[in-house]
Length: 433
Ligand code: HEC
Ligand code: HEC
Ligand code: HEC
Ligand code: HEC
Ligand code: HEC
Ligand code: HEC
Ligand SMILES: [Ca+2]
Image 1 (tube, rainbow, N blue to C red):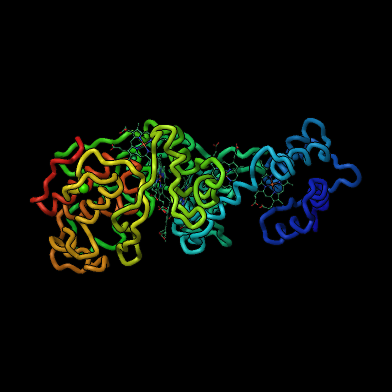
Image 2 (cartoon, rainbow, N blue to C red; image 1 turned 90 degrees about the vertical axis):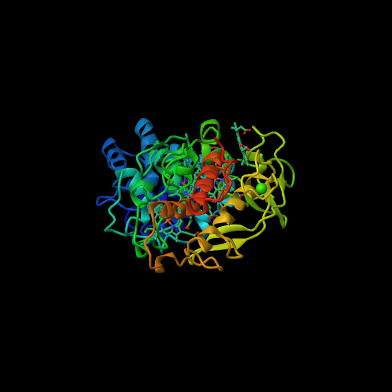
């Protein structure tokens, strides 16, 4: 171990030296070419502090170094600073945040090793995202040698800043050049955005080019919230509902709000789980705590429809799962009943593709088979832009995954127009203005 002073700082900070040794061995920490090695009381000179701050040394010691600038007494200050997060009465609830994070897809899905390189690392790996925030781009020709899932250090930079401030909250320019500016939700939008510009992707195309991958990619939530970058049919006007403009910090306020009260707090919903749905003592529970500040009577209700979700083959259906009990103001899917908003949206989705095989994209066009497998690229005849657009919109809503909650107006408009493009007999009178 070259930097024995570091070991000393960790010991002083009450952290086991073994933890440090493990990190250095794992390559998480860089040691300087000329390590600082004060013997006796820990002292840092101005030059040493500059070396630390230049980033050539272990990031975790910067806090310590900055503090050291004033007093040059690393010992006292460093342990106090570390205690803000690692002490027994920490200023920041690091351990609690970690508990809920254990239930997040960020931790659990494990695509960091798969979606690495080719530009994928920007959103799928901790290392790639940090590189992107620092350089404004990543080199798609490189890949991360030991990639890790998005984690604490992806969204925060505690060892650089000494606080749990977010690594970025800059407004995000979406792929179609529209801006997403949703406060702290800008962090989320940096990754949860479409990777494809609908205007460029949707045109008359030979069937072989209408592949299983044509579309927005898995997380177009930022585009959906703004109400942009789906295929907008010529001659139609599109609008948005209020969540993007009225919910401060957008994504963060709804997804990370903590339920309150005895027995309601659960690591599966709210906080760093980022889930709005989970199980609380084996009961399927929606996190309505995120909604009640505005919709004061928000409740959950059993869902009636199975929920279509992306699968590698095409679509699969799960559920029915619980829905937010907000009755729609119209019968959007024209089945004669005004249902809860998410059930109406699912009804519209099922008019395009459903498990009975009677959806417009299964009968009017042979894009999906009865099982929900995508077969569209095998057709003989080419597709028109309107047909490709309907497919784009179907996938955009499917991958948004909120069944209308992010932006009900835009969602219903897109689906209504897409169904009507394939089935001119469809009654569009419930389309929101
Ligand atoms: C701009 C950010 C971004 C880039 C670049 C990106 N992804 Fe993703 N990807 C996401 C987000 C966000 C999700 C999760 C979306 C959700 O769950 O709604 C996701 C989800 C996935 C999933 C999981 C799907 C599932 O439901 O299991 C796979 C697989 C995936 N991406 C592969 C890739 C590959 C391969 C690449 C590179 C070719 C890539 N991604 C590039 C943001 C990105
Ligand atoms: C995907 C991004 C993301 C990841 C990963 C993440 N956080 Fe956070 N964290 C946030 C956001 C957003 C907030 C809310 C910030 C705010 O309101 O200022 C937050 C807030 C916090 C806070 C409260 C800060 C305060 O000022 O009270 C703590 C503590 C925290 N996170 C710890 C962690 C820990 C520990 C991990 C890893 C287990 C982690 N975070 C992983 C995004 C993330
Ligand atoms: C602003 C909060 C904050 C401060 C201050 C802070 N840390 Fe951390 N530290 C974290 C978070 C968050 C993690 C990740 C938690 C986890 O994964 O369990 C972490 C993790 C660690 C780890 C485990 C290795 C790793 O990277 O996950 C070590 C060791 C550590 N910190 C040492 C220190 C030392 C030494 C100091 C003082 C010089 C310090 N920390 C100051 C927030 C902080
Ligand atoms: C570094 C990029 C990145 C950031 C920043 C990020 N996410 Fe994610 N998010 C992902 C990826 C990638 C996945 C899918 C995980 C996987 O496949 O490995 C995901 C998954 C999710 C899921 C679970 C979806 C599912 O399939 O169950 C939710 C919910 C989510 N993110 C919300 C948020 C929120 C809210 C924020 C901001 C506080 C945020 N994310 C910030 C990349 C990111
Ligand atoms: C008005 C509250 C609200 C806002 C704001 C919001 N979401 Fe959501 N989001 C929801 C609801 C509700 C769902 C559906 C959850 C369910 O029914 O399981 C959802 C679903 C999701 C999912 C799929 C989760 C899953 O388990 O399948 C992801 C990922 C997601 N949102 C990310 C985001 C991102 C990123 C932003 C900001 C760009 C955002 N959300 C803004 C309420 C919100
Ligand atoms: C900051 C305030 C705010 C929060 C938080 C919020 N909403 Fe809303 N929501 C609104 C406003 C404003 C509207 C538009 C006015 C209206 O239709 O009531 C709206 C509309 C809706 C609609 C559409 C109603 C319709 O038929 O047009 C649904 C559904 C909805 N919200 C669900 C939710 C859910 C679920 C959550 C929590 C996950 C949530 N909202 C959180 C402010 C909020
Ligand atoms: Ca209906």
